[in-house]
Image (cartoon, rainbow, N blue to C red; front, side, top):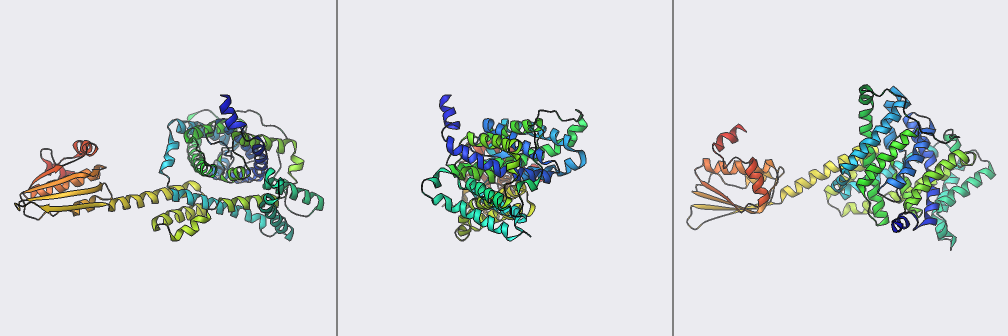
Amino acid sequence: MLELIRKHWLSNVRADVLAGTVVAMALIPEAIAFSIIAGVDPKIGLYASFSIAVVIAFTGGRPGMISAATGATALLMVTLVRDHGLEYLLAATLLTGVIQIVFGYLRLGELMRFVSRSVVTGFVNALAILIFMAQLPELTNVTWHVYAMTAAGLGIIYLFPYLPVIGRMLPSPLVCIVVLTIVYMVSGMDIRTVGDMGELPDSLPVFLWPDVPLNLDTLMIILPYSLGIAVVGLLESMMTATIVDELTDTSSDKNRECKGQGVANIFSGLLGGMAGCAMIGQSVINVKSGGRTRLSTLIAGAFLLILVVFLGDWVSQIPMAALVAVMIMVSIGTFSWESVVNLRRHPMSTNIVMLATVAVVVTTHNLAIGVLVGVLLASLFFANKVGQILYIGSRMDDDGKTRNYDVVGQVFFASSTRFNAGFDFKEAVERVTIDVSRAHFWDITAVEALDNVVIKFRREGAEVEVVGMNQASATLVDRFGVHDKPDAVEKLMGH
């Protein structure tokens, strides 16, 4: 037990505390912006970010990953808040948590193994583009001071690590925020600050139960929203966990993360916050700043609350240009530049999947839709590729009366047409042997294709024998096949 605590909490204390501090500052404008998107008071997003980050530090399955209020989930709340109000949003947040816990126990986190590398790359690139695009409003129709501050911030972020000794001790994004805040306060230049984003809360959150009727009508109102938020939230969390796994060369428990997200969202709803999920931008900031354990996530959430409630006057002075510089750094670091080079080396199908994922996510601003499109395309390309790997050879016996067919490959819905086309039904032979010892029948379509072949040969007057079928294929054929049943032709024609 002590060893686990040391590993997950105390093995990287200094770097985790500093990284969590940076993330806490970066969470503030994001939480406020997402609250505005959802149509609620800024404190709803801030309370959500605090509670989700603190709880997920204990319950999550990916140490070092940051979860809070996000744009992906906020977009799904707009209609609910507009039509029914805040209390129904809090109720939907509670139900979202329950659904996610159920998903965790159903082990839906394991579905991530069906997401191909090209989809993950497309997801990462699209998110990098969205993060950069989200900074453009802060760089449009502004004075030259903003550009100068942003450029200075990027200079600090990328050059500070090269300083001897101190460059390795402090995360450069934190130095950027502190230095530019001091410059702003001393110079008094006219630029936007965190305080201009919205009013920061001045009190701690309190436990409360949503003031909604506990009946079936309420459930029918919030269930569609809760289900959508739960699915989108878990999808983004699983994708982010995969990326953090790769950045840190460690593994995570996806099913525990599902349950942990659910518990965190329940606490968020009870503390007056909105539902959220993992944030890839802040997670990358945390990792790039040295955060590795659960302590970094806990510090991010706890320090966020301290900042907005007790140090609000200071936090409101942070120039948005400093945070824009940090987020531009995140977008540059998140984008897979290698994928651009690989466009010439990778197969066309892989490139299409990656580019389609990017295009759909950037167009719709919906990560879930983009990932689903990518997974669907990857599955279709894979099925088509495997379907092409089917060979049917034949040879005639010396007596000239028996034709032997050898089937090699995978027979399923995508290759059933090729399977049927590999036989000559008009050849005048007395006997046909079909050797499937090097083939596998995967689905009902494959079984039906075998039925068609056998019955067509029999209608031409040939005796047919299927040999070498493996146990798994034989079980499927015995259950669903009709070629060896009485009245096979009638059954097949009726089917």
